[in-house]
Image 1 (cartoon, rainbow, N blue to C red):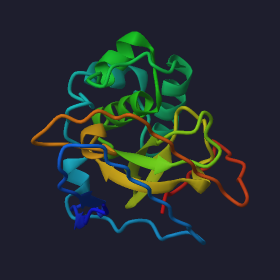
Image 2 (cartoon, rainbow, N blue to C red):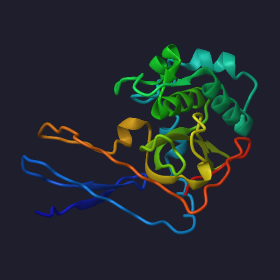
Image 3 (spheres, rainbow, N blue to C red):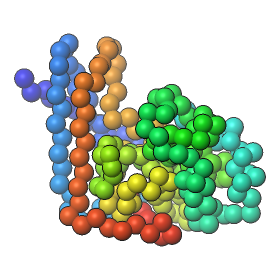
Length: 222
């Protein structure tokens, strides 16, 4: 039987759908068509404060010495570009190589991970250099293999710019799902009061025209 979902919007503009279910199998099917580009989310009053603080998966305080030595003398967009390039060059993309509880420090030590690990390390290094940064979960046309995707955003001169150190999908076609300090704020599924087993997950994202992403350009996500 159909279930009623209550929509809740958090302080970052992320829409959450809350459902109460009885024991048993639940199927969720979601589809949306997007035309044009949405304007970037307005700058929040606390963005420059809360996205500078260390968080569960982005231990910027621990990585401060590394960020200081690797990116000394850089600031603004030059720093953002350098951090993204450094993470992309020093990590190997290896599906299944990281655990759900791994944070930026573990990723830095292992030198491998998946999209969320890349994004966490970018965010942590930028925060350590006093650049507000956050994680964004997105639909990513062009991504292969297709799945949910995660990228970082950096706040420079009042604008949020996307950094995808994996370079696996063009940033111009990314569609924002959720925004937060790290993956703990952007989980696609959370449960309470019971145990949930994920049996099957299928994600799809296509674009009429797939843009060519120039990594030297700075891109904003709508």
